[in-house]
Amino acid sequence: MVEKEQLINEFDKELKNILHFWQTRTIDHQYGGFAGQIDAKGKMVAKADKSLVLNTRILWTFSAAYNFLGNRHYLDLAHRAFDYLIHHFLDKKHGGLFWAVDYKGNVINPRKQIYGQGFGIYAFSEYYKASGKHESLDMAIQLFHLIEKHSFDPQYGGYLEALSREWKTLKDMRLSDKDANLPKSMNTHLHLLEPYSNLLGIWPDNNLKNKLTALLRIFLEKILDKQSYHFNLFFSNDWTVQSGIVSFGHDIEGAWLINEAAILTGNKALINEAKKETLKMVNAVIKDGMAPDYSLYYEHDFKKNQWLKERHWWVQAEALVGLLDAFEHSGIADYFDLFLKVWEYIKRYVIDYKHGEWHELINDNGNPLPSELKAGFWKCPYHNTRALLESMKRIRNIDASYPIVANQSK
Picture 1 (cartoon, rainbow, N blue to C red):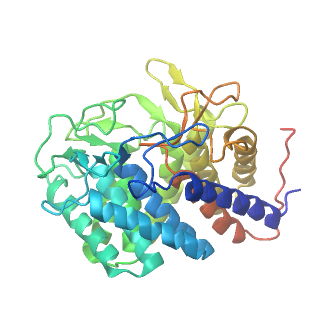
Picture 2: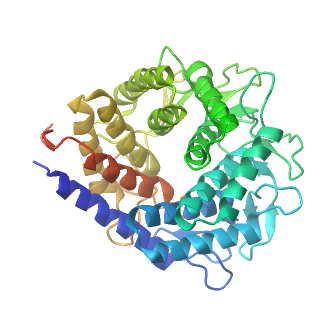
């Protein structure tokens, strides 16, 4: 029997461990802000470039941690992250946020990746809740307007992947080297749904609500494959599917983010539709992407039957929230039991008890890959801190009569 308070205490302890790592290992005292890269043993990598993704996620993390825990030191670190973004990532001439700077804070990639602008909104919205600084809310609103002005596709709907510093068309729009060079992706749209939701919670603007509703319709009608109940990943301008790979982490993350967004619209029909469709998504992830040890695999190309079975830290984190969300919306205990099993996997294999934080990549045998980072361009604190925050919030609301049992014999 796992008591409710015991589970919350476990999450609280691990959340504070993660935050302590970022407090003590990542501050760049020499050049400002936070280090661009931390190796597997928790050592700062000299002269590493600093990404917009990492820095916005750090701002979101410490803002959200302060909003939940009330520790003033977290707010101080959020101030530090905000100041660095404003001084080094903000394009004061053309608006928007640069994609990357070097270790000294000089711009090395000025492109306007819409995914990154979305994380700017997400972070600035959360920081406004923590600090009350209207400058941060203004920044989030400005980014929303820039995205709508330059990236929105009025013909087919949705948003283009990336633009130049001057918001002009780019030949190479890829988010990363592993991505297809196509004008629209699930990933960018998911990380617009998320910040638009966060912004709507503090800025109840009708146009923003309409845009969030339209994004939900795109997910339910264009991105979600109604046969497999997995997300398609890449698309042409007219939403013709251009990929056959399934990303289980994005599916389980998308399921709960869709529900969160639908609730914020206040549209009862949309809320009910979202609940129905996302439960099918979670079931598909469990059926197709869950390993015998209850972790989630990374990707599967169903057409080629090719697997990427390595376990990514962020996928396991999102599985916690996605499964708990499914339990909340359905009342089906199996989802909660799987949630507990994923947490057991994380405690056994993902948490690095020696060097801190979570292992980035774990192989089929439960061993971390030697190439892993603890912080980097894409290795950031937001997935695992958010999963722990969401889990604590949601478990507190679970009816005390529900038997929270972790049966490890299954």
